[in-house]
Image 1 (tube, rainbow, N blue to C red):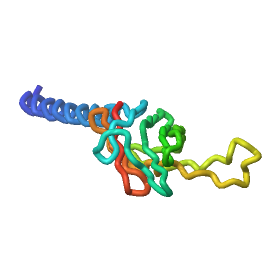
Image 2: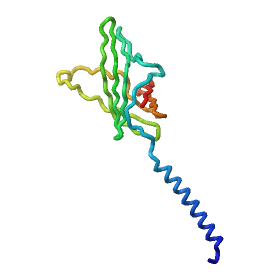
Image 3: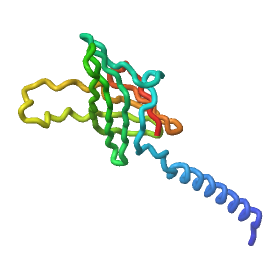
Image 4: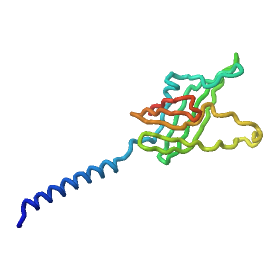
Amino acid sequence: MKHPMLRAGLLAVCAAFLGVVTDVAAQQTSPPPAIAGTYTLAQVDNGDLPAVVREADGCREELTAATLTLQADNTWNLQTTIKRQCGEQTAEEKTATQQGTFTAAELAIQFAAAPAAPPADPDKTGEEQAPPPIAAPASATLQQNVLTVKLSDEKRQLTFRK
């Protein structure tokens, strides 16, 4: 052992290097927060439900409920419940479903809508299908189990809670 101080110094440098490498590796392999799950609509444009989504020809459509499910395979499903009231007629409720895929980078999510499916009733193939009650999701951010979604028409913001 000709140079014990040199050897000790070299060991200290190696230990410090391994500590930094281990810390960086631990940061890179940490799993991202769990995005997958079912989120329930809490607000539309910072207002409580129901929210008016369309008014025309004496009819009023209100969004009364919605759930957004994000699957681990990067697919999404949005189910909305709309109450439609036309004049003095009895209000009717309908459920609509939209779906597609999403990509996530940390807490930011980008959505892509799937093309609309053909009508289930073969007798209605020539009829025009009603548009979805709200536009498809375009992007979202997730913070503390609150998913803030911007729609593709850029007119509305939906707030969901897990």
